[in-house]
Image (cartoon, rainbow, N blue to C red; front, top):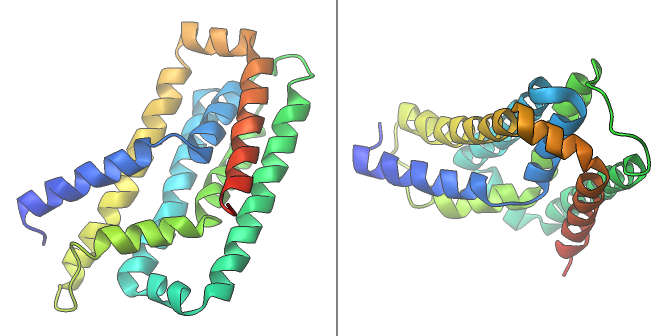
Length: 200
């Protein structure tokens, strides 16, 4: 297992990484607005599952493979950009419609979008490569490796679930629904900028 000081440092860095605003926050906000706290939390938990894939794979050495085969990274990046643009288009179109009532189907879409927004982002693997290189060694026991990867997943799930629950509180959600057209257009803009920005 990691030393307590190292573990606390890892928790702090993972928390800062999760709290950085970006496409993930936009997706969780969008699903909270469209489908209530449950959909937002579903998106957050699915996002954490996507993060978990990269965290586990990085600990196991996949990030090294991505560095050795840049074509694979480019393919994943392209798929991620197209997915972001598809989400942006959906948000832009939704801005022209009335604020949606909570949707029973939103949970399934939230799980899909939450997972893919993390999974189709190769920068996550590179982030974990840079981060985990400070904590993981070739001699590290399996339990400690699992601890490192699990820490990233739990922090991510907790942060985005907290965001969804706070946004879904009565006054906050009511305000979001009143201004849903602005929220949707802002979300569309953020997603489109990120989709283009990864190539700059």
